[in-house]
Length: 553
Ligand code: GLN
Image (cartoon, rainbow, N blue to C red):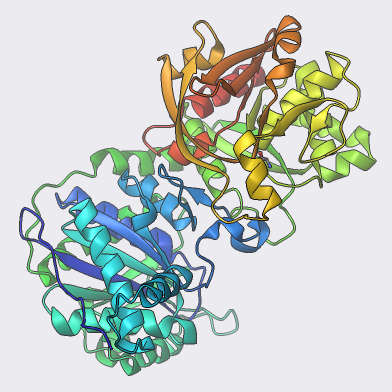
């Protein structure tokens, strides 16, 4: 057994609190948004916060999990491929998340085993407990130190009672034992209202609390997710079961937009109650802009209709797969005082029936988001052709930029069979080809974390739509791809009106392209959707939404 490594660094103010957020009853009830909202509120009270997501799976990161299975893979500045909750954290607190903000069971075991192989445990036997929890704690503390956060919010994926969560709960419990005044627990629990009964039931939450108790942990706060605010009698019951004052049982009802969550929490004085229980005073109070936005968006009357032409629609909600794209569309539409109406357009159907493309006339603009593999891409190419010819605003994100290039090569430059090497390895005209450094990864079948990942600089060409949108000549955006525009076709395509508006100078990679003589047809090799914020929409989404509104008029 190794020494326990539960030591702390210190932030300048000496404040160093940890809040663990765990789920009760069931998952997918908005624990991530709750954790992000706690971060937002405490930040608005003047504290430096950091958010961590700990996922239970053995995958090292989210990069190797199918989008329809896992939802969006969020990409950080440093190239972390993470759970979509990191996107919530960034959108709510406007703080950059990196590898330090994301922990998985896979990372933890990999590091413990690496150390064991390197004799770093100095001949001791390495045990699941405490060595695994100790590694979890080390990672949490490392994130706190690197961010110099005063309040670090750690969200555990899944729900209590899941076997795989036990070692994470044990880590949190060990931190609490060592440092009882600085470690707190929030349970986000679900209160069902069975239609037959028509009233909220707290029993599942009571069981969840007992399960948490059996891991040696008592919650300090309960956030009650339900369709309606939690009834007073239910608050009383929960308060007795978990021996908590009533003000620590907080309603988290369904909301119009996720950005209402912090506003609702504040209605129940979550910030103050949290700070008080942690022995802290509020320093400032500033969520004014946020509150205004939350109010404004509820009252928007006019709409803008945006089609998302994608292919990961094979499960109940596409929201998870395209969450950052949806959020970016919302931010941009709200900026123009419009309520966005998102229409899901499955590209595969255009392949069998081109007539269906006419539905593109019913929207104000289309987005072709990121994706992998051939399925549905011919349908996307048809949609891009339709958008180009009919002057429908088009925003291509990563794969969407590649699709735009292929369409232009085929239909404007006459390069029959033009394609991406990913989609047709034998294409006679690989206008999109594999990046040099990617070849060796593919030969060795090294798929994990080997794409071109994270932030890269890009220089914009003056006078282009992209340069006008950004209002600057140098930008930085986040990437996640293996293929790129083939410079061999650059000159020929440029001659025909394919404008290269952004380039990564070091390697001369095409990062942004746009179509001349079109109101707005832009494709980007990166993912601008990761950098859009509710109060600061991404310039490309903002200008795309503007073009959509112009078209509608
Ligand atoms: N599949 C494409 C590539 O690897 C696009 C990736 C994406 O859309 N993120 O280049």
